[in-house]
Length: 258
Image (cartoon, rainbow, N blue to C red; front, side):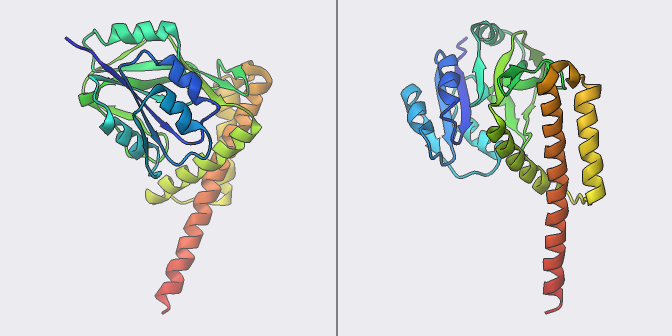
């Protein structure tokens, strides 16, 4: 039985990360990249590794990954982020798994934060479903925190996917802004509301959960920085939700008077 592997990656301005990612999967049968308007060298670097580079607008993480999936033709699909790398040990795991009877596999992730591997803080082992039979999986339509929905049974691989989650403070702030906006829109679409009190309470809880309950303090300085950034992300998500709700209520009110 032939077991071909398609690697799918979505990108935007990932020139710093993408080469290491692509090199780590250069053994795959096909690599598919869907780019959403990179202004740096991302597309040129991708073209060194694959001809299958496509440009699309940005509809959110879930829909974009489904677009990439629709281009894939392999029996199996491995979905990677541009800041992730497959180690030789994980490659062997993947190739063995494709011979077995499962429909999908979760892969543990080892994530780094500002150059340091994070072993606690709720970031480890961080199992993510990334390898699946093409006909058995689709991504949820979520704007962020999309997941693979598998029709079938899921196994687990042993070796970790390397994930350079946050490079530096600039990268961190950009991601907090991007993710908190998308999360706020998702909550708004589910008719959730927020207030300043709720934003503060959610943020405090996020800090305590990361730093105390999930033993972030064992990650030293980076564990503290990570807990603060998790709290910030949460705070801005609920503040943006509050402001979005207020804005749309005001807009609706103005229109009802005409």
